[in-house]
Amino acid sequence: MIATTLYLIVYSISLLMLVSLGLAIIFGMMKVINLAHGEFMMLGAYTCVLCVNAGAPLWLSFAAAALAVGLFGIVVERLIIRFLYGRIVDTLLATWGLSLFLVGLVTTVFGPQAWSISARFGNVSFGGMNFSAYTFVLIAISIGMVVVTWLIARFTTVGLIVRGTMQDATVASGLGVNRNLVYMGTFGYGAALAGLAGAVLVPITGASPSLGLFFVAKAFINVIIGGHLPLIGTIAASSLFGTIDGFVSYVWSSVVGEVSVLIVAVILLRLLPLGITGRLRSGL
Amino acid sequence: MLTVENLDSGYGSIPVLTGLSLSVSQGEFVGILGHNGMGKTTLLKTLIGILPATAGKITFAGNVITSAPAHRRARAGMGYVPQGRGILPGLTVRDNLLFAAAAVGARRSGQLEEALDDFPRLKAYLDRPGGALSGGEQQLLALARTLIQKPSIVLLDEPTEGIQPSIIDEIVDQMKGLRQRRGLTILLVEQNVDFIRALSDRVLLIHKGTITNEFSVDALTDTTAMGDFSSVEH
Picture 1 (cartoon, each protein chain N blue to C red):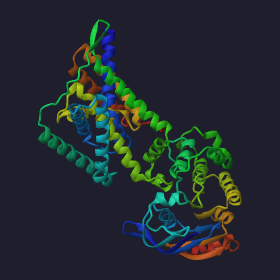
Picture 2 (cartoon, chains in turn red, brown):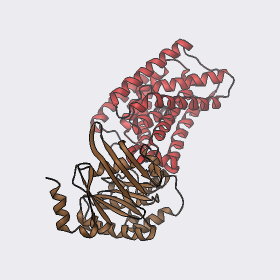
Picture 3 (tube, helix red, strand yellow):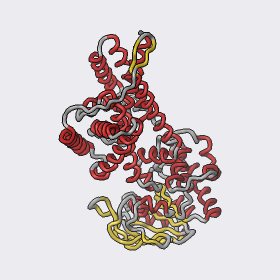
């Protein structure tokens, strides 16, 4: 019983980290409200399905999804987002429009039904219970995403440049930073993480036009409660909500789990309007 | 090394600089004196490229840079210490310095130590967030951060604003020392007459967006300077 609860909690936390880290970078760090975040994930999912159906191994399909959506994110940034920095309402409209457009386009091309892949992962049993082995892959990838992002941000020159530029782009450009390039690259990285997340979800949910819709609200709640520091915020908020969701889902049902997450989010937002990391001045 | 001819600039449709011309030679310390609202900060912002010039020509180190983006100018050797110091508050003192070095593509070992030798007071704060430093310490950090880039000219925007006198003296000593050791060139805008006199070779007076007068620093006694300085206001 403890094993099952623990498993549900860790799985919930990982799922939340997976779907919200890309958004934490685009929304938390860059202050761009990207309502098309879910559709970035959806595009990642379709890329993954297409690659697998074309005969590519699953891990390569994940990488292809991250790369394709990352490049797509760069195109979106150049064509739409870069004209809208600092203009929140306009960004909302533009990215919402993009979201609707992508859903419509994908529905037209691939149809409304879910596409799935025929990968078999088998089960793992411990504590007298059976668990799908793939969920452990998902947990590992989710943790890996956070660790890699942390390593880049903390130890590389690129990470340092991005962290500084996000704090004050004008000062950064006066010091020699090409701010356009940094914004473009950071948006692309956030999009790539969303694409990877969508691909990693494929063995569980398949790829459907409404995939993004299902996860985007969770991701936004997570990022808003996490606050402005993308990594600490994502880990903290995911851990909190994942624990609540996992525990309540085990005791009652997954519906009650999601309701309780929302209630806690509303209360937290009242107590900590800037999110969990809102008062931390520095960090990642 | 820096020549400005008939420069116009401003915010949106509001003109601030009108037909401003000046030149700074290699190794010179030039001060620009003027009241608030006369265009001091706007001039430096236009020189570094954060604000676009609407007319005129800026030549730096032999190249016309009038429409070059700010980061190109910084990489070409223009150091800029903005008003309010522009410290990145969430980065540590160390990261503020390394950020500047990396931003001009000049990150290498030993440069942090070099910068700290010039500004030893910063050594104690290396791991503190830049935002936690006092105004004076932030100003020292801002100077160190610009100098770590090894600029050929430093544009200094009111470095004494809101800073305790002991640190102002420290800044004067540091800048004089650096001038001898590195052959620095400085363009400084200020309202603090003592500070500008302590550092400058010659002083230009800015009024309503254009240079109206020039003094040698010897001619800039308190009375004449303050006289001219305040008379232009009326």
